[in-house]
Image (cartoon, rainbow, N blue to C red):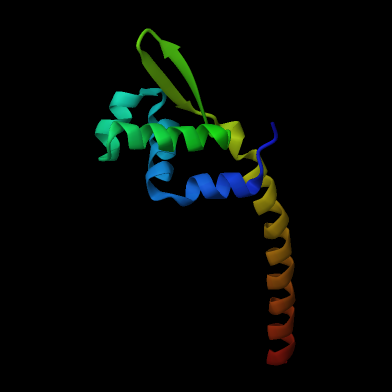
Length: 107
């Protein structure tokens, strides 16, 4: 299943999901219990957020006994990075044109 840029934006658009993803990215694998303590919301809410992140390809899970461990999937950001590169080139071109215009106006 190919994940769209829209799905990634939607997943990371929520501040709680963004915080969970950042925590997993910085601190590595975490259990749902540890993420619930960190997030300050209920365990069912954390599970829903993790499900949304998983659907967007941003986290992966593994079962170990009764617990599920989650970790960040940095490759999941690839569509977003590609999208930003496309628009980065667009804006660099615009800023170069603006700089040229300002130089001509100063002459």
